[in-house]
Picture 1 (cartoon, each protein chain N blue to C red):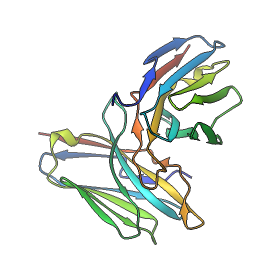
Picture 2: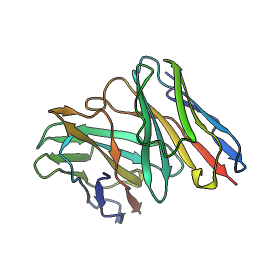
Picture 3: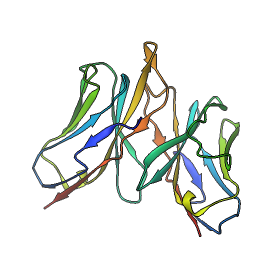
Length: 114
Length: 115
C-alpha cells in the first residue's frame, strides 16, 4: 500500500524551512528519500533504517519513527536548488527483515522562490 | 561508471504495436528494478530482479507486459500490444544489494507515448 505524503505541495522563499511527512499503514523496515527535478530521474537523498534514526545531508535531514510508521524530511534554510518533487519510498518489514522492494508515495512538490 | 543506461529515451507508437524498452544497470549491481511513473499513480514498481532472476512481478499490470534479464548487464521490458493507457515514463534502477542498505540508482527514463 502506497505511503501517504503531506503536504502535496509547498512554496518557500529562500532561507525558509519546510517539513515533509511520510506515513505508512504497514510496519516498516526502512525509509528512503529521493528528489526528482522536472524531466529528470529521481536522485537518492538518504536511507533511514532503524526506528528513531535521524540522518543529515547538508541542510537536509530526516527522522524515522518506527512505532508510528512515519518519517519526516526536514529542509532548513532552503535554497533555489532544493526545488523539485520529494518522494519517500518505504520498505515493509517482513519477519524481522526487509522486503527488498520500495513503495513510493505520490510526492511533495517543493518550489523555492527568491 | 556511466550510470544506468536506458534506451530509447523517447518512444512514440500506435496502439497495438509492440514496444521494447532496454536497460543496462551499473556494473556489479545485483538488483534491477523497473518502475512506471504517471501523474495519477506516481512511481510504481513493476518488477525486480536479483542476480538476473525475477523475484516479484506482482506490479506488472497485465499479461501484455513482460520483462527479461538474460544477463547481468541487460534487461528488457516489453509491452505487446501497447495501449494508450500505457503512456508513461518508465524508469530502470539498479542497486548494489538489497534496498534495506543501498540506494537505488535510476536511469534517465523512457518516455512512452501510445497514440
